[in-house]
Length: 359
Image (cartoon, rainbow, N blue to C red; front, side):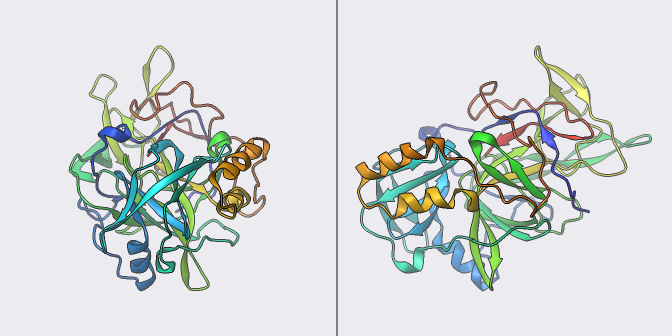
């Protein structure tokens, strides 16, 4: 059963495992049903169209939202002059400017020329409620078939998830349902969705390399862009206190050891009747719609830069009362973490969300 409360967490780490210059192509939004993941075009006709509308931005993804702009995650980086490409027809568009949202992990990139109208993805403008279906695209690492095992609630051990893989391949997709919204502070309001063992074969969780990928919600029969992939956690665990540190997709981290404190120590998270699944986070676009609109409706880059600066003091717009929310589901500062490479999850108590790792 889906959690109906989004608990607070104690830390977060970026999940772009490599710097942009050294990025490798990585495959698969990890899913419950298969280590290979869903790397083919979705069967749903609407999602199949979205599959081709999303472009490759370095080793990540970018989604066109206006004739001259595409949206992705700010923390993955990139440089003006690099191009977004579309595998379905090998078209390519060079970037001429970038605009980073000071109040979230979103980045808009302006291209030279214009995308055809068939490339542009509409943004979701509706309310969100817990349980709404999501579809996630990404280019992250797949999982393996090697299970991570931990303590049961009573005696013995049981499977808790799977180790991450290392193979590189194409983009992939998974599904999930919304559990709630997290207040990410400087990272923006986050769509939060956990990795349920009973969520079905396509139940998805983010992994390293999925950053910048889109999350879609269906509205009026059309899949619309609602979020941009940002983080996941916990993912670094130990099966025993002195065992090797493992990186895994976890549908239950109860009965495993998580890293905590400084100096580093490892603490057992108690196993309970209910699973404690890892949670993925994607930046929710709706609260940042004013900033997005301000950027894409102003034609000149110099003017856009001034407008972007003007938004430094713009508060986050929260949709209060629509979905479960905690007061501090994400930390206000990430200064205690490396930008993208060093998984250091915090201890997850029964009412706290452990460290996330930006994708």
